[in-house]
Length: 299
Image: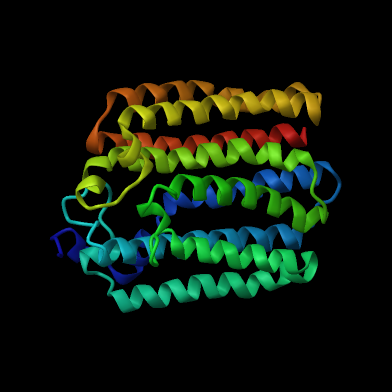
């Protein structure tokens, strides 16, 4: 269904809209944090870091395109949805056009990723293939992760563990405990973006048969999950301080704590479309925390 507002959107604007630019911060943070650790350990490889960043962005864009298309095909994206209108559901882009966009995004990521395979070996090839499959399976296939309560798990694993540890590995060619610790707050805060999204959409998702954790376990659990991920993210700073870098600069992410407290208040008091602002600020928090964390590791 095309609204009067979507009629004014050009094809280019539609592609940009479908890529969901505000969510692309989630693809940047794990690479920035993983690279900061590589720099601090004297193992920085600029080309590998850049390619890892491009692959991460392309996979995220491809995943967003898949989400736009298959939420439309499943009938869960409608005109009256609480979130922003989608490109295919609005009629600006056709399903075939979006399929082409998905192929190009994931294809480009795979081709670029071959450089990382050359550096890091077959393990990186396997990791890349799994990441692409997960991006597609998030909303497509016979068992879409987002529709069966596994979206949060996938987000935490791929944005946190895979993104951060993988970025460090393609530069250092080794894995220690530290990149694992660093991946936890990265994954937790990025997953909180999805938590807010699913909390906002829980009633629509329930009526559309989309079984997110917010639908399965309810709004009280979802709010607790959001707060718990916040607490874990700041608690990890102490582990990094005592096990890796005995420097007070490690605690720079604490400067983002006031925003975290504001967001906790928002998720407990706002409803429906009001949560769009909470969603936006949660994405900004993940980026701010990640940037401060990276700076703290480098100083």
